[in-house]
Structures are given as structure tokens and as C-alpha cells.
Length: 270
Length: 66
Image (cartoon, helix red, strand yellow):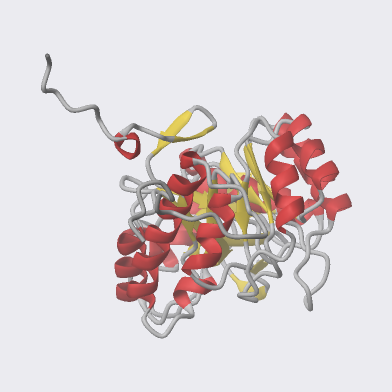
């Protein structure tokens, strides 16, 4: 009889596949709101993230030309950069931003598309987002799209050729957690591209819940960068994501209203 | 000539190439992207690309964002 142990289930490879590339980490992080570049570097490393978002903005002319640039800290050689269209309120601005990002990153085609509706909610403007998606997909971009938690719209983005669909859990930066788990679950069940929760996560249990619902990953920024100890929170998010994914794969027990004893009732001596 | 550089009016000599502009700003070796009148100027053409009077020039780079 062989004494070789079966590999435990959690040791099997379970990569995240986006646009044909495999990633080990299912946590994607942003690089905004950190107090300095050192904190950005340390928290990003602690998160274990392989895909990291960046924003595209005007270079400050004549100010601190020697200051370290983000790409010296978050090297494109080490991380898959995901330029975003944050701050764009029209399809035109979002497309322009993506084209600048592609030039900046030497032909890089993976982008995070977000077209916002208003400043108060930062909810996506779906009409503008659809318009931008059409142009970007036609132009060869691999679009990961920020959207609301509407299953019909999520499916529409998949049909349009987005490589990942990223519904919000709650408003960007709110830390409110998964506000509509049933819709997120429906989006996941309908999907044949990765579904990532993007925005609204507040703490590690929120990330775990997203993964337990079957999401393929979670993208977050404020929950880490805004924590009192961002590096420690990054580490906790990594574990929350891993725990939630394993729990999803393991298959949780059904919820029941009444008890079910864990110890056998046979063989009692009293 | 006058151009608009990242939203601000600037005065430059005529027949300025994109490379010369970036050099004058201390940005020659920086990772950035250049847009003139909302059209991308590929990095490979910086030496030969001439900026004209009235052009709207945008120079962008990557910064922290989520």
C-alpha cells in the first residue's frame, strides 16, 4: 500500500485567469491615498497582489522633477499594471485616458474602465460606460469594467467583449461592504468571464464574503490605504481573500433553522 | 509661439520638437505620454514631431490611484 499522502485540496492550483494570463493572487489593489511611496510599496507587497491599478494624470511641470515616480516603486516588470479611467465622466475622456495609458505603458492593453455618474455617489454612468466599452474593445483594449450590481448590465458587458466585469459592493471608498449579495451571486452565476468586486469593501471579512459568494477576485484601495496600519490591513485582506476563496471551493453547509448535534447520539452511557 | 501646456499658456521658440520641449522641462528620460490636440504622439516620433503655435499639449504620467 502506498504511503503517499493525497495532496490537500487547498494546495491545488487555483489560478485567476484574466485575458489569458494566470494570476496566483485574487486580490487586486489600487495605489491611491497612501501617505508616501514607501507605504505604497510596503502595503502593495504585503497584499500579495499581482495586478495593481494606477491613475493617469498631468505631469507637474517644473515641480520636483527629481521626486520618485510611482512606476519606480510599482515596477511594470514586477506587477501587471492596470491603468484606470478614474475621474472620467464621459466616454470620450475615458477612451482618451486609455489611449494615453497604452502609449505610456508601451502598448499595454489591459485597462480598468470606469465612467462615473456623479461626485456624490461615484456610481457608474452605464450609458457612457457602454459607449466607451464599444470603442475600446474595437480598438483592441482588454477591458475590465467597473459597473453597478445589476446582473443584466453585467451580462451585457460580458457580451460586448469585456475580459472581466467588476460590480461595486458599495460606493467607492465607503467601506460599507457587500450591500447586495444576492445580485453579486446572480452576476457570478450568469458569468463566463471573471467577476471581481470593485469598490466598497471595508475590512477583511467583506473581502471574504465577496469570495464566498463566488467572485473571482476583489479590487480595493481605500480599505487598505485608509486603514490605521495599511500594511497590516493589506496582509489581512490577502488572508481574507484566500479564506473566502477556499470556503467557496469547499462548499459551505446549508443554513438550517434548528440545531444538529455534532457528537453521535449512539453509545451514550447515561 | 504660444502653446497650451497642461492647461497653462506657455511661450516657446518656433520649430520646437517634442524632444526639445521635454528636454527643456527636464522630462527627457521620464516615463510619460504626450498628446497634442488630443492625438497621441508616439515616443518613437518625438525627435521629428514639431509642435506648432496654438497647439494644446498634454504630458501625462502614472500616479497612485484605485
